[in-house]
Amino acid sequence: MLYNWWQHIEFSYPWLLPIELTIPYLIYLKISRKGSDTASLKVGTLQYFRIFRSWRMQLLPIPFILRCIALASLIIALARPQEKFSEEQTTGEGIDMVLCFDISGSMTSPDFKPDRLEAAKEIARNFVEQREGDRIGVVIFSSQSFTLCPVTTDHNTVLSQINVIQNGYLMEDGTAIGSGLATSIDRLKDSKAKTKIIILMTDGVDFGSAISPEMAEELARLYGVKIYCIGIGTNQVLDSDPSGVKSTSSKVKLSFNDNLLKQISLTTSGQYFSAASKEDLGKSYDTINELEKSKIKTTTYHHYTEAFLPFVLFGLALILLELLLNLTVLRKFP
Picture 1: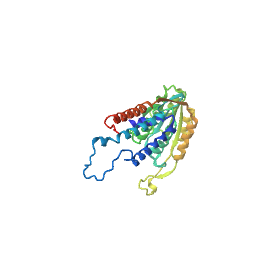
Picture 2: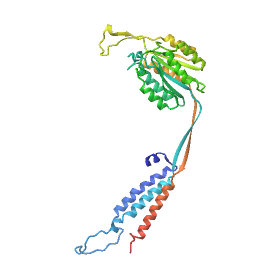
Picture 3: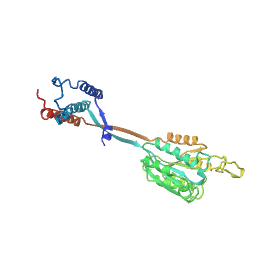
Picture 4: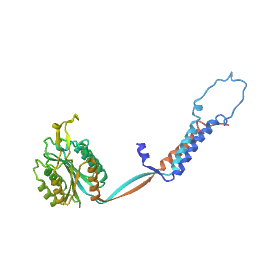
């Protein structure tokens, strides 16, 4: 608790703090002059004296210790510590968006490392971290669609939900692009934001949709939602044998319907991107990031509360305690 409080302390006159270095020097002088500042009597022998240290002698160093601590406290007070409170005020308009992930079996194809879905998740996380002030949601789909995270400004929640996305999350396989888009549009249709966008990440082979992609296009136009489509994958022929042993019988062709994605983007005033590599996927998001700028202005206000008084009172209390000890139990007689 004390550490957290100290983290919010700033000093108006920090150049006074080096005066604290005089305290170790005073301690050094005290130790080096030990015994020279007390009266002494020379005797020929100690044979008849019994060495005895009373409780008062045990307390003799305490006034000096109190004085050093008091001096340190008063120097801190002179440096004028202040407790700082920061407040941010956001003005302007952000963008409401939904990241729509295809999690069908085809998204586990290994033409991206480690696969298409994991590459899409990584690039999407980087994108979310750059979109300060925007409200972002997450929708996933395979044979059916599901809202994994409603549209929110809590980007930590968005990132955590992106992390848990995996193939098989919705049990039955399929690529219901129309259903995924319809669910995403439903998350945005009541939004008051001037700009509403969907970023669709899929391999583009529509299969098993309860709602056709064409109907989803019309819904997007009706509610003023732009759709940016990213076609993930290549037309490579890859070895599907997990052992890595190449065999002509184990090779499968990877392909996707980019014509469908181009049509969806064109109809909704969005843009289509073809990502044949992880680098292409990153560039697609970079372009969207540039095209869809949020008009957000964040103003930070700093409030300061004086915090020197406790140090002054503490230092004075120690000085009074030292004085009291010197006048009572540790009083010296000439």
